[in-house]
Image (cartoon, rainbow, N blue to C red):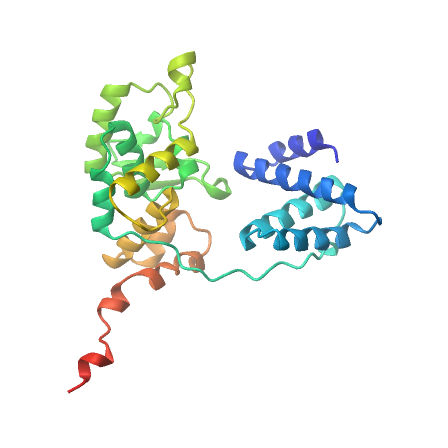
Length: 280
């Protein structure tokens, strides 16, 4: 495989840095797998066998689908073949509900954070329902305090959107700005101080900050930055915001993606009595 050609094409097609890394990784694994096979087979057969090997090694369904996407990208865009002819069977997706925090748990997490920058990052994730890649890409110019909104540029699928800026978050961001003085990116990484160049905060650092705060808050759920986004959407739904508005705020392309929050909301739980209550 010509990985330099693959990288150039990924960049030319504007794939996100995360997708580029994922595709390169799985294609490298696939290339190694094919080289180790004693019998030469078609790409279709090799692809099926490779996915089966991932299943045996405990890879998740999501990871298997990412590997299939990478192989199909190689087949179609590098080899120039018709995508429909490479019919690698996809595993059925698990219908797993997202983890959602209660509002009290969100407060406990925020109260467990002493560093103002860390608090500003996590509150921005929750208050605006952002993905981790979106929050680290925010620049100072994206904050519009006159219109009380934040511009989210090149979100998932390279779609721009605008989300409301709560006054509580604006006040925190102003205090944060006065203390840290970022130059371009709203949340700059440590390298910015060392090289005098503005670089975004790293996703790994955000996950580490959140992990420590969750542990300190005594919360035993598995919480990731995306959990704050799920919680944002669920809490909006529970407060009566309609699904179409939530879909737009989250930047979902399909309403079906947003409908999952009707299943994790506690509305249907708290408003539905138990038959135990009817017993005399």
